[in-house]
Every structure is written in C-alpha cells, then in structure tokens.
Image (cartoon, rainbow, N blue to C red; front, side):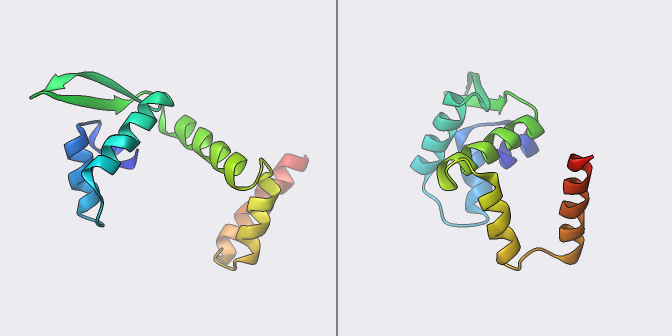
Length: 111
C-alpha cells in the first residue's frame, strides 16, 4: 500500500520494482498481494496500461491503516488490543517520547 500511495497509480510491475529495490521478492507474491488488497477494498483496479491493470488507493490512508491494524490485532492477538500494547511496552523498543505520547492518549481517553 505504501508504494501505491506514494506513486498514486501503479501496476503490479511498478510495485514489484519498488519493493525489489529494498528486498528480494517474487513477482507472483506482489501479484497475489495486489489481488488480496483489491478483494479487501483497499485498492481498485482500473483499465489497463500496455495490458497491465493500473491500481489506485480505494480509501484514504488512515482508513486503510486502521482496518489493517484491526485485522492484525484480530488475527495475531485474538482481537485484544491490550495484548498488542503490552507486547510493545515489554519489548522495550518504544522511545521515551513514544511512551509519553501513549500515556497522553490514554489520559485523554479517560477524560
């Protein structure tokens, strides 16, 4: 999704090339992921450019990120967001600034 958001319109080849610049990935994997993203309604496929479908984001970034996080929490943490927060806190990868931000968010939610 980051590649599609950055490019605004992208073919599977465009996404593949962008990802391949960062790490090794199979073209068929990108193709499968684009299909899954389309099925979930995150991207939409339009006409073709040189026989290749062109994908665009179907929903705003924040809406998609929220849905992806909820899906992740459901699948990995059995729908319990507190388990995710506990894992992040115990992992000690949060900076002091990130911890303060979370504390402020929690305080705001209590008000």
